[in-house]
Length: 424
Image (cartoon, one colour):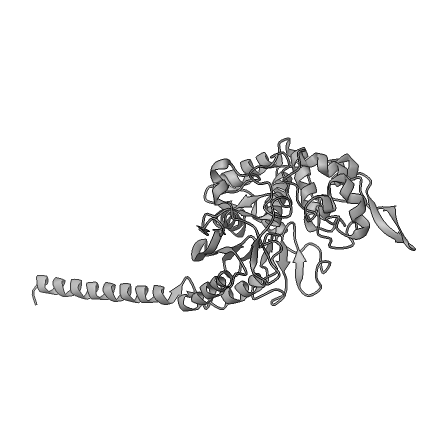
């Protein structure tokens, strides 16, 4: 055989091998998507579509990343059903308590800058918190008793400061005249306030709290207090600090406390459940659509004030999953992220394996909540949004909807149907 014939034979064999490899890769891509069964992911579509088709949820955006790359993205339903506007991946959502994640990162960033420590007393930054009180039962009466110790930034990050949203009846009557508790929507709402957040929080410090610091997990104004401390420690507004240290470096152009007019049309409508379980448009104001476009734009609620998209929020979570960095931007060190995502309170929150770190719920026992791996972390928001990061599986999961209250079981079912599609 001459050389040219031999060369042509080798080239033909190589071409055949490459074609076979390419065909196999294409076949694999049709069956698996970075470890997820493409066929089984159709169950996720069917689940989410079903909630919309049945009229139980107006619209949903779900986004799942593995190794930072999308393995599932689905927008279904209506951004505004009455106006005939369909849900799209770039829809903006009120994320309520998901705001706590960014504010908590801001606190840890200031710790890394040497501006504060997590063991600082809140009273160091906010004078009315220098000597707080706790509402305590004395026979048939409620009395204000001095707190057993000072509230610390650590207490606020872990929701163990004893501070609620002022909703219990014994607190509500005291909180209402101060513009808090029942006077703030469902307790956590600040976007209609025509004053800076620190002015509101200074009034909060004069009110009695629900438990002594360090003795119980009490979910409430803790992160709004932290937002004020961020302003005091940094010398700039919470809005500016988050933009300069977190959202700006990460390229999160759709995450802010208030929306500019040119983005207002992308904000999803808030729905609630009617008597028959079908969606009804929520009212205007603090217990419904909110003031994220037309509000006074003075109060930056670190606990519940931000608006974002699924893609923007996933960008933020991915940076934390990777130890505080994204591209050339670093918002935290790996050790600070580990502090945030490690249970810091033992079984104060839940004795069955759900803890709380510096801003995130932690999953410390397999099965404590869904099928996420031990070491997973996440949280959600009052408008129905939810997220989870599973470092072991290299997953970032974001589910966005606007239902208040969210009386559906979509979060739990979405979690189960998503993980059943993860096969490698």
